Image (cartoon, rainbow, N blue to C red; front, side, top):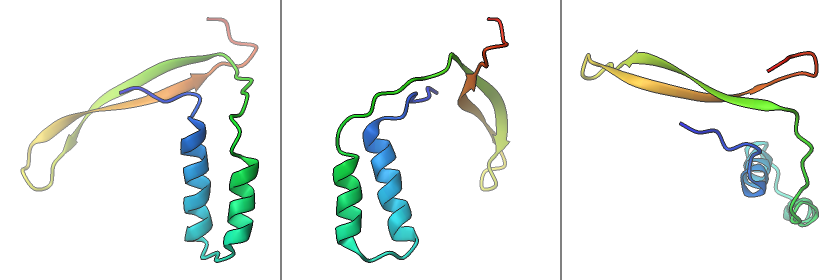
Length: 83
């Protein structure tokens, strides 16, 4: 598994739209205004990171077997960490 870092602008915008609808909001003009303001690609200033993952076996309730699961994540290093 790989982590998308930084997250793509499309993923961020899609999450904001989904949250808007989950809250039960209905003012589409406000939503459109928000999307318009966020339509240009952002510039990121990111801290140093490392990609990592864990491997573990999860049981499958239906078959009784276990399956290997990779859980990918990003580790943020602060300015005090040497790597």
